[in-house]
View (spheres, rainbow, N blue to C red):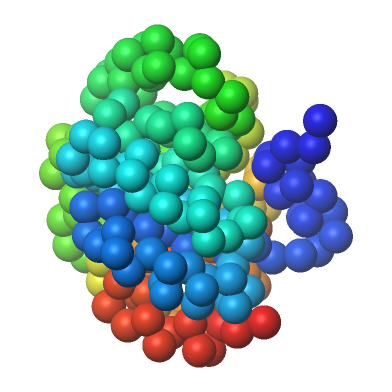
Length: 241
């Protein structure tokens, strides 16, 4: 069976770069779904990610069902909590916050998710999630009560990412956080990419095409953009097919 993860791997083998548009159900009005997704479909985006740090129960299901009416792109859950799991999506990033030391976000939430996941058809993709210092406190930091990895200690970031791979993660996600002042730096991305044998996702603070290209050039296989589109949908104009 061809899976979303297989497609990511195939894209990497073909030297294709992928772009995910992240929609936070807590910050998005469902009635705006069609015009927004029309812009996504007209852009170079390859995936739609749905999730956030703090989302009301049922909002994710409602939004995912609406998104699926208007696009053939894969819809992937990027959940901040068990309550954001919905079988209406195509896949789920099974995120373990390996940059932090809060057991709830390393394994606790995952155990609670099993009863919701075991009877779904969701493709579950184990993902090592690393929060990187960006200059301000993020929602992830506040909700999980963890500290980001210091950006001036790239060796620790690299070792943490590689440990995630050794633990069996299929993806590594470097995240500066929603609304980050600055994105993950090129040298951190390149150093992490150099040691990995699994795909690398990078998100947070990417608001310009220059920042997007910098992330790709440094080695990101998938770049995630969220806040930039929330603040200015005209950003899609620079990303048309």
